[in-house]
Amino acid sequence: MQNLAVCVHTQKRLYLGLLLASIVTMVAMAASIWYLAVAPGKSWLGIIILYGLIIGVCGTILMAAFGICGMLITIYRCRSVRLLQSPMRTAVNLLFPIVLALGRMCKIDRDRIKSSFIEVNNQLVLAQHLVISPQQLLLLLPHCLQNSECPHKITVDINNCRRCGKCAVGDLLKLRDRYGLVVAMVTGGTLARKIMHQYRPRAIIAVACERDLTSGIQDANPIPVLGVTNERHNGPCFNTKIAITRVEEAIRVFLPDKMNPV
Image (cartoon, rainbow, N blue to C red):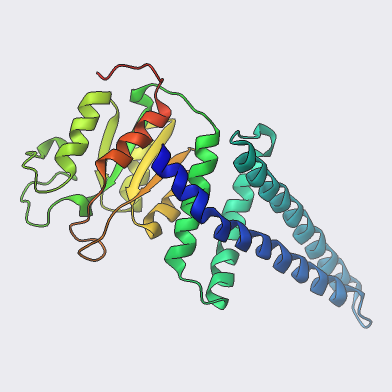
């Protein structure tokens, strides 16, 4: 896991910094609502509504703050804090749009923010030290890994692959055969959710671009997803590639140390 760990160490600060900025933004919103509530000339109904908003916003801020504390503690200790799992999920799902908005205001590239989010997520998944059987592990692949000139419909059944070597799918199937995990290729989020519902995995390794990985990680919550970004030398969604060694490293994270390949 050295490569994944290096990525986490070098990129997680951006997302964590924007998360903290999001909390400051929400506190400013709560203060603004409170100011409106205490301003003279309000009806009783208006005051009740405003105080309700203040309580709701403050409760959300507290939950998100606990979640961010949980992330920082987890990353520092490399061990998850079970009691803070729910606040961490709240912080990830609730604050992510605010993080993107702040990033846009600061003219930070969206893919860079999403890449940082993926690395933070990976660090949190690694900290769980989850060990499962290969049959409980799902490897989700994007259809853009398939060579664009290939006539075989492997999104319907990945076993239709002829392993000709023109794309990475053949090597990924060798990993499936070696470790015995479940592998599926999807064309988008709808099919990915269908596959997750069908196999009900305990953990997922997802290969995709930053955009799809970000939405997929949030959709799969609370199932842990280890994200591996693909290489797009030919542009997005076209003949993309993946480093097989990175995928194998991710697979071995979830399997027993002394497990012999099938």
